[in-house]
Length: 468
Image (cartoon, rainbow, N blue to C red; front, side):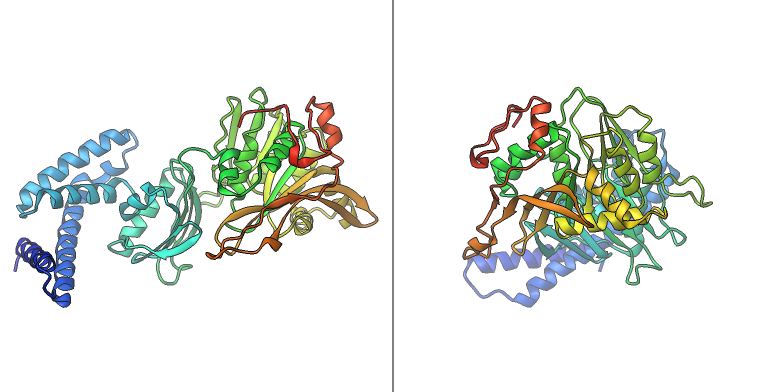
């Protein structure tokens, strides 16, 4: 039986099942499943043959950098039309449109991931292997119906992503961090490190940058906390955003950076560009991995040191994960106030301990007390964010770094999350971050920068800087 006959037979079986349901008779479940499976298999074979024919015709033109995206899409559509006409398959108009869309996505886009990227309810996409794709919605993981046709299909998509930003992934370099055009973060691992087949993880970023009002609406922070953080950024406090993996550190860093006045020069430094600052005077720097000969690497440390020669008003480091922590602390302690960064830690206390560890990774033989003193002197505020059991992301601590007492870094909580409120019937936490009532010492800087902020009663605090 030809593919066209199989498609037609599958359509007839499925139509008969629909008629049976409408007539309130008992449908044959096995037949209906067989119909759907037969239709999918037949369509998949046509799609695979069409895709192979398209790549045979296009050749190297798919990777031609002289062609724009619009020109490539136009060429692909023209070739597809000819291939489908020559194939003479009896396809319905809907199947024809679907075939053109799917093959075009495979050739120039991200294949089955395209519809997941267009789905605003999906925040993260996790491809464990070519035939198993999970997605995160509202903090919960679910198995998606999206599938790649083969390991080669998945590898083509990975190669397409990384090649767009001048990176590579192969057996000699099986790990890669990349980004999509919209700023979404991408991580790929291929064999031999990925035993069951290539793995791809995409953390989607909002098409429109989130503002502090959005986080208040989500319940991630309170309005009074937002006003305090705004005043802290305007007063040029050095702020660390701390949290675990997937808690929203980069998103919160982006929100905080929106408070920076538009007249200041900002230099951002990242492994893969993710921040989306809206100010007019922004210089974005991105690290570079070594080339195939092992040369040409530019590390975050190199970029942090270079940024000091670029006359920055603010330095924003996407994430501290190594020796660049030492260079960042030196920048904070040498007149570059108002710097922002993130790091992985489970509490404000852990954040300071991890900062010491990262400084030691710089390879400098420094006494631990000297590192601790430099960290306590440089960092003014730690904002701790966590993903709770109900899947929501909440700011759990806003903590001031007071300095040193003996050999211990002294911290003081300004806001802490109220876990005692419990959870509702759906398991969602009812509590929110509440002010502790202490008067932070950094309030002295508010007056220096002309920021009028009533810290006597945080529940009624207001700052003179608006914007949200």
